[in-house]
Length: 142
Image (cartoon, rainbow, N blue to C red; front, top):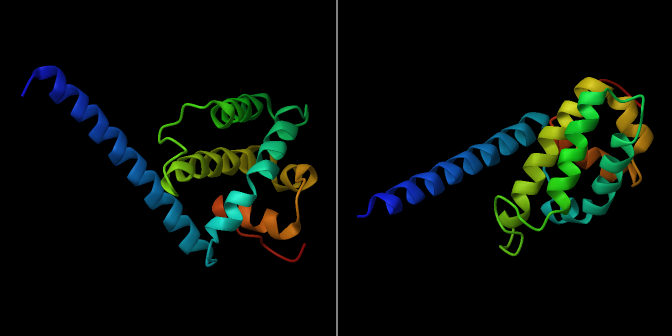
């Protein structure tokens, strides 16, 4: 086997392993929250999540580093090039969901849940689904 092919296969295998690890983290977080995630509902939330990220990234009360991460997420979501192409059923969008969950979890940690709730453009059920994907568990009645 040519050396260049070994390198390419190694890189592709590493990316696949990383992606599968991220999927496992998402699944564990969902189980830990104790809620089932309806993936069809998650896909319907994409426009709301994009608007949320845009609003958070333009909010001066959100820490600057968090806004940079949110802008990077917005760019990742809007670019046609992904880690896993979106035309692949289910897994094409799973990588986007994983990246969104990681960045929003960080935004919750640094900007606070109040900022997320203030800028959420969708329904309360949609917000609950997004928070479940991020591994956030509410600590009392809201």
